[in-house]
Structure formats: C-alpha cells, structure tokens
Amino acid sequence: MPRLFSEPANKPKRNILIIDDEDVILESLETLLELEQYEVSTASDGAAGIAALDSKSFDLVLLDLMLPDRSGLDVLEDVRSRDRETPIVMLTAYGSIETAVQAIRLGATDFFTKPWNNEKLLLEIDQHIQRRSLERENAHLKSVLKARFSFSNIIGKSDSMQRVFDLVGQVAPSRSTVLIHGDSGTGKELIAKAIHANSPRAGKPFVPVNTGSIPLDLLESTLFGHVRGAFTGAIRTRRGCFDVADGGTIFLDEISTLGLDTQAKLLRVIQEREFMPVGASESVKVDVRIVAATNDDLETLVADGSFREDLYYRLNVIQVKLPALRERREDIPLLSDHFFDKYCQENERFLDSGGHSSLGFSPAAMKILMNHNWPGNVRELENVVERAVVLATAPEVGADLLPETLLGTGGAERMRMPVTFKPAAGASLFEIVEEFERRVLLEELEKAGWSQTEAAKHLRVALSTLNQKIQRLNIDVKRQRELSQSNRSA
Image 1: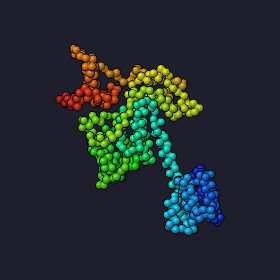
Image 2: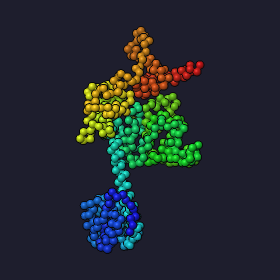
Image 3: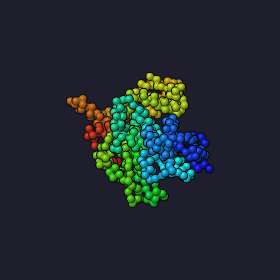
Image 4: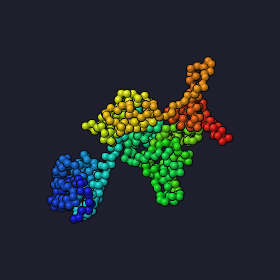
C-alpha cells in the first residue's frame, strides 16, 4: 500500500499501541500500520495493555471493546484516570450508538466498527496524531513564552521594581485594561508581554502597535482594517490589528499620539467590543484585552483637550508606573551583567566554559554608570554594554570604553542657567528656590518653542515631572504658546 502521508526522513516514528485479543486483527493492523512507517506495539488483553502504557508513552492507542479479562470501556476509564491526552480509538464488532456515546463520554477520541475501511482508518489515525502533536507544540510554545517573559527574566531587584512585579502578577490573570506609564526606554513593552504571557490569553496573539510611528492617514486602517475599495489603493480587504489580536492582547504604545477621531473609535471597541473596518457596512465583534502605554501625562492632555476624558478613564482602570533607571540605580550592576551575557553570546566573545560572559565593568567605570542620569533609561544602558562588548580587548571594561556622553567630555549641550535672577528682599528660602525654578522652566520652555516634550528632554526629567512642576508654578503654557505664535505672525 502506498504511503498516504509523507514525513521527513529524520522525523521520529510515531508509536501506536494495539490492544485486541484476536490474533488476526493484531496481525492485520500491525502490518497496515508498519507499512505506514508507524512503530507498533501489541497487547492481547487489558492487563497487558495497561502494563505497556505504564512502561512507555504512545502517540495513539487502538483499543478493542471486548477483551478476555475486562471490558474495553473499563480499560479506557483506567487509562483516562492517568492520561487525559493520548488519543484512544475504540474498535468493536458490535457497534451501537449507545456504546459509542458511552465510549466518548469516558474519554475515547474516536470509534470504529469492524470491519473498517483501511484508508479511512489511516486518515483518522494520522489526523488524531497530528492534532495531538500540535496541541503539545502549542503547550510547549506557551510555556516557553511564559518562561521568557516571567518576572524572573525582567531584571530588577529594587523595591520599586518588586512593587511593579507584584502588581503585574495580580493584574495578569484578569481581563482588565492596563495603562503602563513610564519614560522612554524603561521597558513598557516588556511589561506588556509579561502581562500577556502570564494571563489565560497566553496561547493567543500578542499584537504590538506603536501608534506614534504610523502615519495618521493609515492608523485607522492599521488598527481596524479595511474592505476592498474603501479608498484609493485598497485593492484587497485587509484585517486590522484588533482582528488579528482576537482572543489575545493588543499593546497600544504611545497612546497619547492618537487623534480625536481614532480615540472615539477606540472607545467604542472598549465599550461595545466591536469595531467597524474602514469602508465596511457591518461591525466586527472582537474579544481583545487592551494594554496601553505612554510616557506623557494623559491628565494634562485631557485638561488641554487633546485627549478624551472618557477614553482616559476607560484606559486607566489599572495603572502600572515604571520607574526611570535613575530611580533604581541599584539595578544597574544586575542589568549590566544581563546585557553582557546577551551580547557576548550574540557576538561569541568573552564567554566562559558555561557560555556566560566573562566581561565586567571596572570599579571606576561602574562608578560613572552609577552616577549617570540615564535619560535613555534601560535602553541607553543596553547600548552602552553592547558597545563595550564590541570594543573590549580584556575581561575588565574600563572607563575609556564608555561613550563621551557618560564621561562628560561631549554629548548634550549643558543647560544655561538664568543670570539675571535677584531674590526679592525678605524672601524665604522656599520662595527663592521656587522663583528660581520658575525662571529656569520659563527659559527652557521658551527655547523649546513651548513644547513640554522638548523641554523635558533638555532638562532631562520625565515629562510627567515637568508637567507637575508647571502646574505647581502656575505656568500657563498654552497661553504662552499662543502669544509666541501671535508674535511670530505679527
């Protein structure tokens, strides 16, 4: 008989156990299956079959209903009490609907009556084995994903990161929307993946979308898809990211960049669990968990009208705040070792006998790292370590291999302090400091064209921190921006 299902030559044989008391049946099935390149074991009664299953794992079991020592249904029940996964196909010369129903209820995968059609039997056997193989592979991939994004693989021993881990551990099993807030480079997507990998949705898609990097005219189509002919260039129907993420998690990074129209559509997805593809006439139902992230202060954006208040409260069900690297300096040595391992392995340099990095920063270099302000956060540290791995010539990485931005000999232009400030007579220390801070912020905001984002970068503080100071000092940025634009146009 020709091979019905070809398999790679190096693929291991599948093991099948036949439990039947008729020699002619055993011989017939054994010959049939061996021709199909299966490895076959046989047992002539229930006790021998159970013993075979206890001594070896099988990819499928063919089990006769009538055995000399006990009923095949009893054997089925016994097997299922210890193994819920292996496919079991029942064989009988006395088929009936009642017997088939009882067998399926007890855990049988399929039911065949004697005599059977060989090609149909082989087809069913192959499909059951392939299905079980896919289930095992998916379970393995799920465990790998969970291990890769387990909390133990997100580096941080500081109290602030431990609090993040505790919160994420509580949040992950739920279906609640999560808002992750943190400076650029703090690892917001890594936390989002950890939430997904430790949730019941781990076996479904995780779809990351950086909304800030997608042109506004393509964003709606990217998120919700479009039908053919919806606009010029829409030559075929396209699924959107929400459709792709159905059953899983969608990660919306830089959520603050969404336009008001798109915000309204996102709000509908959250409220109604459905969306309308561009150009479509019917809505699409979807089951998606939303994890959003931002490095902007959304409350400030709500106050100035650029972000919907109702959407903000829908997104901000549970907020995870990631600390900047400068706020958890005790994690710098641990992170450095982690990145040394990663890039030494990638570059196959400075590896010890166990495959781990033998590189490390000298005490002088580590002191510089500990004192640096890290405006680029963990991503900046990772770049510093990768550079060191490439340039290193000895196991100890000295300060000479650190970039100039860390050494203070180059890099960002130093901020110019106001020189015209003179405290009012009788002012308290608090009033003097507050007025000085106000003048510094006004000067930096003016230089940045009244852009809080640019001013925050130049001052090397989080945007949320800058916005809090602006509010505390009663600086009307919106008014100043309008005056500046009016003066330029005059």
